Length: 137
Ligand code: CMP
Image (tube, rainbow, N blue to C red):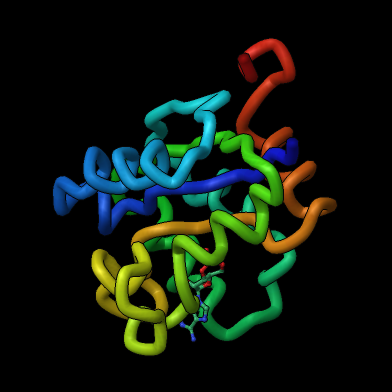
């Protein structure tokens, strides 16, 4: 079993898609071991996306992620990191495969409905950024 970190981003939450995304998560066989609704501050979003701080879209990305409530989750499954990335689809919703969450719910490369860790080290950092060990059940 592996754990990954996932976000239902402010665009998808504001559009009322959180329930549908959570239903897909259960359907695909993930165990939700942690879940909370948060309204990130700009500074919290900057800390989370620190690795992207030199990218030209960093300001836009952190403004967006602090623009409204989101849902942060810890998901468990065999191969959870790849499995969640496959379910999300490509970063750009226009390039994401049919049936993926970003294809269905994303509207642009910035407002792409969901986030997921890309590697075990990233998952460890991202999970610990939002969850204390005692919160993951
Ligand atoms: P995410 O998986 O959350 O990781 C970093 C995010 O940066 C990514 O999803 C995109 O939403 C965002 N991103 C990547 N490229 C761009 C871009 N060119 N313009 C705006 N946002 C971007």
